[in-house]
Image (cartoon, rainbow over all chains, first blue to last red):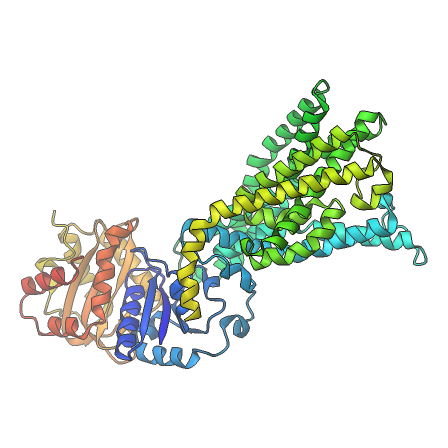
Length: 487
Length: 150
C-alpha cells in the first residue's frame, strides 16, 4: 500500500524527525511505501499532490496542528502523537492499512470539504497550480450565493419591473396579496445573498490556503473589501492576504499550553486584525481616491466621441463586475438619467448592454467549449444565462475570480464592443437596470440586441482563445497525474 | 571554533548523575565549556520547560532533552551514557543513552538539518548499539559526525 504522513512536534527538532524515520522504517518493513512531510525546523519537502492522490491512507503524527490539513480532506486518516509514532510505528502503519478504503476524514470528522471539482481541476503542483486551486475553492463556495441571489433578483425584475428596487423595505410594508410585494421580497432576499459574495469568496480562498483558522480573517477581509467598495478583486486580495497571514502565523512555534487556543482564538484574532487593518487602511483610501478621480475624469469627457465613450464605459462595466471601476461607470450613467437628454439615455443603454455581456459570454463559452472550464465553472454557466439576460453582471464573478487574468481582458473587449455598438446604433434606455425585462423601454430594441449579441460573441471567442493559449502547459502538467489516478 | 555537531569533550561515557536534572546540568556544563552555550541557567530553564510539555524519554532506553534557546550559539549534541540509567519519563524504564540537543533560537533550516539527521539516527537500532558499545569519546564523536553528514 502507499501512505503519506505528516509529523510535527512542539520544538520541531527531535520528535518530528524521529517519528518520520520510525514511520519510514516500519512501512518498509511491512512492504509498504510511505512519503513523510516533516513539519519541523529543518524545513520540509511538501507532499506532492500526486503523492496525496495516490495514497491509500494518511498518517498524522503530531502534537501541534498539522499545517494545511485540508489537503487530506478526501482521505482516510490515522492520527497519533509523535511519541506513538516513535514507539510503535509498526502499529500505526497497521492502523493505516486498516483505515485504507474506509470513510474519508471529511465524513468522520465532519469537516467542511472543498467540493470535489475544486481540488481536481488543479492537479498542477507549481505555484500557479496552487493559486488556481485556492481561487477555485473560493469560487466553488461562492457559486450557490451567485445563483440563489442572482436568480431571486432576476425573478423580482420579471415580476415587479425595474422599479422594484425602489420598493419599500418589506419589513415596513408587505402585502401578501400583492405580486409587487412578493417581487420586492425576492429582490431584497437576493440582495442580502449578494452581500455575501465577496466575503464568502475571500473566506474560502483563505480557508483553502491555511485551513479553518483562516476562515474568519478571510471573511472579515472580504467584508472590509465590501466596506471600502473594493469589489470582488478586493475580495481576492483579502482572501489571499488572510491565507498568507494565517499560514505565516501558524509557522510560529508556541508553547503547548497556548497551542490549543491558537486555531480558535489567537490565529483568527490576529489574522482578522492584520487583514482588516490592511484592507481598510491601505486599500480603502486609494480606492476612494481613484473612484473620485475616475468620476471627475468621466465628467470632463463631454467632448469625446460617442463611440469612444461607449467603448470606455462598456469596458469599465466589465472590468470588475460590481467593483469600484464598474460602480463609477454605472453611477455616471444613472446620474445622467435625471437630465433626460438623448445622450444620457444612450449612455444608459450602452452601460446596461455592456453589463449583460460577461455572464452571457461566459455561459456561451462554457457551453461551446466546456473542456476549457472546470466543473465548478460549468455549473455556474447555467444560471449565468439568466443572470446576464437580467443585467446581473455578478453572474460572471465565479469565472473571473477563478481565472482573472484571462477572463477579465476578454470580457472587457466584448463589453467595450457592445458599448460602442449601442452608442453607434443610437439605442436608448430610460430604466437604470432590468436587462431584457426592460426591453420595452429601449429605443432601437432590435439593433440593441444585435449590439449585445456581437459583444457576447466577441467576449466568448476572446475568452476561449485566452484559455487555450494559456492552458497548453497546464494541461500537459495535469495529464500524468490524471493518468495516475485512473491507474 | 569547532562548528561540528559534536566533539569528544561533549561526550561523557560514564555519566554519574542519577536524576534527570543533574544529568542535564552536567552535560550542559560541557556545552558551556566548549562555547556552544552562553548562559547555563537560561539554557537549563529552556530545556526544563520543553521537558514539562512532554517527557523526552523514549522506549528503548533513550532520553533526548532538547530545546531551542537564545543561549545556544550553534546546533550541538552533548551525549552521555549512564550505567545505571536515569529516568526521563519513558514508559519502559530509565534511559541509558542521553542525547542533549541544543538548537539556537533563530537557526535557519540549513543550520537545523544536521539536528534532523541526528534525530533520525536515534530511532535506528544500529546507531544505538554502536553508542552502547563504544569505548572512547573520540570514536563516538567521529561516528556521530560521520552519520549525520549530509
